Image 1 (cartoon, protein in one colour):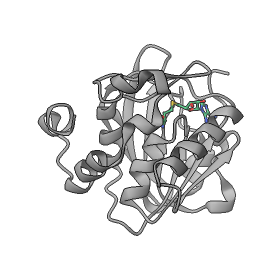
Image 2 (cartoon, helix red, strand yellow):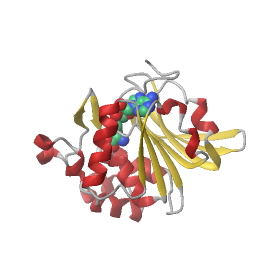
Image 3 (cartoon, rainbow, N blue to C red):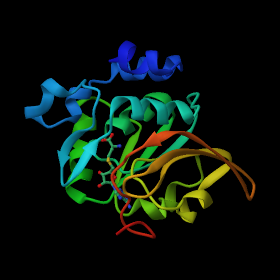
Image 4 (cartoon, rainbow, N blue to C red):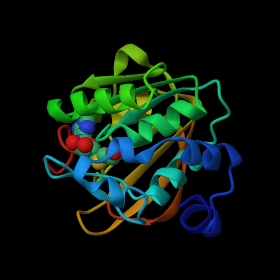
Length: 204
Ligand code: SAH
């Protein structure tokens, strides 16, 4: 997976490659799908949701440019896999999940994989961020929205980075945003297709 799906496609951050190599992705997919855990695709995890394609998880982590000391917010814990990857790259991760059963599953998966030391799963609507943990050095949003939720920008530290799929149900781009005071620098990393962000100003 790491060589063919990630490195060859431009994932060059050694820490990201090492984390993806080290974290047992099979612990984050339903038991009957374990044989598909390292495929180049998203996988259904129940409640209409998916664990993202490994490349997307790696790209989002790389775009956050983590060096080890950061506090990170993830919106959309799903299986907990991306949170485990972020946890290997940063100091602390808070991941918010709107489906309570998935929040519980993410907690369980992280515990089983031995990745729960610095990863906290919160049950709730992450389109509002998670104020008690703010400000964050980096925010990763694992679900697509028509616009960037203002609460997320407000909870981003000055100089902090946000990755988020922005667009419609079928046509999204992964935006990388860097906050400079009130100004936001943004660029597009790639086209993508994520499940919709619920709550807030999302698609409902
Ligand atoms: N990072 C996950 C991918 C999960 S897919 C992984 O590695 O497995 C996106 C997740 O976002 C879904 O679990 C969905 O329930 C969740 N979600 C959607 N809208 C949300 C919101 N407003 N707040 C928190 N989670 C949300």
